[in-house]
Length: 131
Image (cartoon, rainbow, N blue to C red):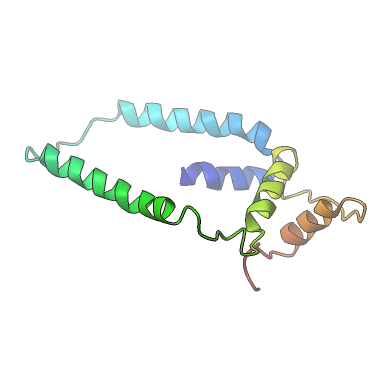
């Protein structure tokens, strides 16, 4: 997954939109998967983790991941507390589908989102940071 993200950013810097880059990323991922399938597997130790311990670890991990969602379902969220980063991330992702980091949009006051994209992409400032 990290390789796909890094490759996507590099292709965007070259001027390729995400809707076109996904095909190249898919080909690279499929190629790496086929290459790793053709490699000779390493010998694994014969002693393995007991199945009950594995299932128990999976259930505990799932419980720890879902507990905050189930317990705090009526509590305040980051969006209700005034954080608008998710909206900014969604808007920037929508722009990057066809646009790229190399060609940020020109700030157009009649379209406020273009000013936000321009500011975020050109100034090296990330949403949610104070720099």
